[in-house]
Image (cartoon, rainbow over all chains, first blue to last red; front, side, top):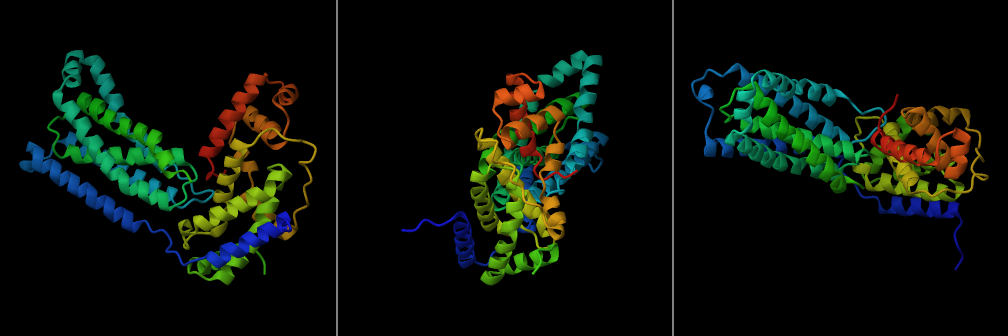
Length: 219
Length: 175
């Protein structure tokens, strides 16, 4: 049997690929977004059914800390989800840095919490040992894991060319959305509590995403 | 037919719809672009493999191209990903046969420029980029690279490792 030259091999490969080509639906972001929104809604409803709504929300007078946390986590979540979806459609020059700005803004909470903890060590100790802190962590991370599923599936259908960054973003997005859902119940308004437990929830989710997701989406 | 952005994007659109003829045309245009781009970036023995590998990646991931966006940056990202992956797996090789570069025709220069890895290397700190060029692209041994660049051998290894890691994370960046 005659061995093909490299050029003939290349031509043969292109012929074979062309012969095999089947119609494909360009990967769309909208279905993933809808599934993600539905999962987040279900998680939030289940959490509220189990734990209940914050008292100030029941009274229709939301505390400023609740509003600040909502806004920050929602912005971080939305920007990170958009960055995750963009990772599935690679393109030189498409790498956007918006999520870094949102993450830097969100870091104000742990930073402010740390400064206040230095000023009020007793309060800080009480917040650090609050039993509901672990609940915050568990609930947020469980919701983050749920939210990560459609994002990972989306990335697996796409072509992420920076798997480690994609993993970090999946974790950041999931963690933000998970903490956002828990925030609807969380009765604490302390800056120290928010900086510590919410910061841990988002940070751990981002770390887990960075460590676990790349091996699921590498191709 | 020229391999300009509009033509390639039109062919890829047709390829996504299952048009084998358009797809074959597209692959026929992409292959020489990739060949020219990769020519100075890997050893000649790896060139054909890398082009074939990239075309296979294009085939497998063609659904990830969004018809609302330009085609060439997508192709460049896929090609860079495959190239960086190849560099990470590459062993030191013969330096003498690497620089058989063929002059790029003026009409295609801009297209190939867009695929270029030089900007990707430019994102790295100088010592890392120099170590990668010397060891992974020119094929020098670690000892030779250390002597030429004035870095210790362990520093060369560290710079290659860190540089490739950084490049892998910056495949879709363009400055």
